[in-house]
Amino acid sequence: MPGPASSRVLSSDQTWASIVQPNPTLPLQFVQPIFTEDSKVIQIPPHLLAIGRKKYSMCLIGQFIGTSPKLGLIQAMAIKLWGRHGPVSVIPYSAGLYLLQFADESSLVRALHGGPWHIGGIPLLLCKWEVGIKPVDFNTSLIPVWVQMNNVPFELLTTEGLSYLASAIGKPSHMT
Image 1 (cartoon, rainbow, N blue to C red):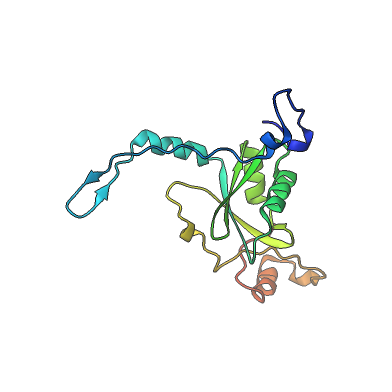
Image 2 (image 1 turned 135 degrees about the vertical axis):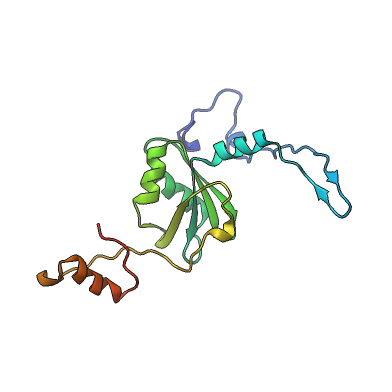
């Protein structure tokens, strides 16, 4: 996959305008629905679902807590944070949700488990795309946060002692 436009070399038949212009729209096809008494039904072929599952198997869903940064900043930071081993694409989905598409599993796993992540100072929540997930399933009412505790008295450096301290903030999950 070619790098950013600034690092490309133009061939003799290309212009910069042709590189930065959006791709033409994807041509869609009409699929004849099946008519029932009160509705139209589309039967999705199993092979079509398999293609979609394969396409999104290397994706995370991301949501910002608060106002999302500009798409250009999100894309630039995604490449900087997770794009060492292959390209990372950020695709706006809906209502502040983004699809992050990875080229390799190690980068995806690093992004999913390596947080906390902030872009433009705004926390980014990530979850793995899975079959059947819907945008409404991405629950932000409970948000895991990472906490660093400094100057904890030695006598509280036990699982139970740290559980008490962490409970002042919320429900403790685990310690690393």
